[in-house]
Image (tube, rainbow, N blue to C red; front, side):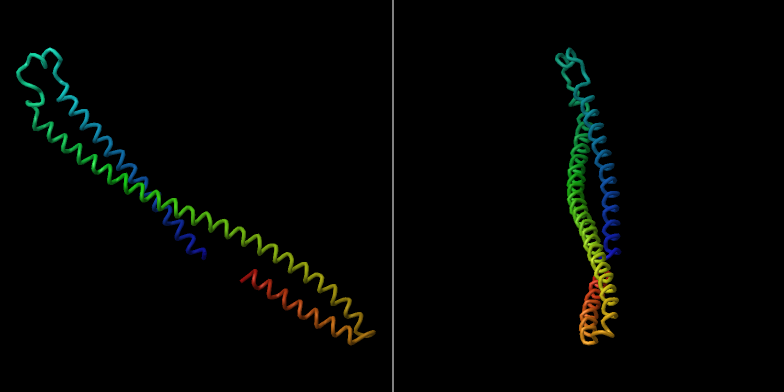
Length: 172
């Protein structure tokens, strides 16, 4: 994954987190309004003492019927809204979890590739060091045995090309 793609995904994750915080605030506000409506309803339905409630021909529910109905309607609207917000929050949480998993796997892949590249680089450097020694030895053979020296140098050239290709793969 390209660094720009990774950063774009991290940006999306941060945006999701901000949106989740906003949803949490809206859910809390809606829950507060539900509690207020419940308290209002409790005041009107339980406002009369027991002895008045028993002996009075009128009930508080009848006297404040319109206010009670309005608060019950408000409460049901707030409860529905809270359900919608909670569902959005759960969906957003699922997306954030999936995105975090992708980013985590990407971090692991990058670090494992970096370790593999480092090992390959070190092995290539070690091989290049050995080839440098072999060149020095072959140069001593040039005067004594030119055929053997040419064969050694051909082998060295082939191994150098292989080492260079590996280093290019690591860097590429």
